[in-house]
Image (cartoon, helix red, strand yellow):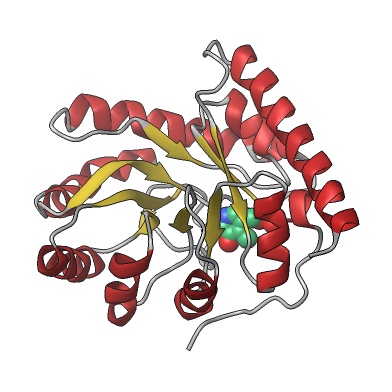
Length: 247
Ligand SMILES: *Cc1c(COP(=O)(O)O)cnc(C)c1O
């Protein structure tokens, strides 16, 4: 590990923690109630180790197999691995075996596969339902951009909540990318309204967590109610190679 790089990462990590704490207080909540997931996708093991040395404990990965190969070599206590990318149903078993939490639960089919493997190994998987609040076609998630159609989410959520080995505890979204976070803010607000809608119409569910906000807009996300933000580049720098899809 490179000590200089660790101290650069530590400085950025602590700066972001400070920004989050201030935004949490501005949003009327107690500091320490918002969690920072450090997104290590596409970063080599070396950089992940540096991030851990710099203080990161919640690590976010997007690609199942890439993540599993890292998790297998990084055997440290006190870490939580979060799957934040789209999961193909045939990768469900790996998610159940290797991850502490899934942010991107986006279909009944995936929920069913996860539930089956969880039952086999005797665990519950904490999960967030991914929703698309922008209507962008490139984004995964249940369609939630048009508030008039929210009632149509109910039968889907009912089936997802029926799987007893999934601990659904909130929502996740990946809004469009803008350089100006003020342009993203309306999507965070829509997400917050959806949370309110679900609390009202699905009181049997737990909807406390909102995973939203990246390097570009995590401060606005926290101001709008995020309980988990997912930040990669602002902590670790540019990713070496961006993988577009997983096969
Ligand atoms: C890559 C990614 C992030 C982090 O994005 P940065 O711009 O590196 O902060 C957050 N969430 C998801 C789902 C991602 O794929």
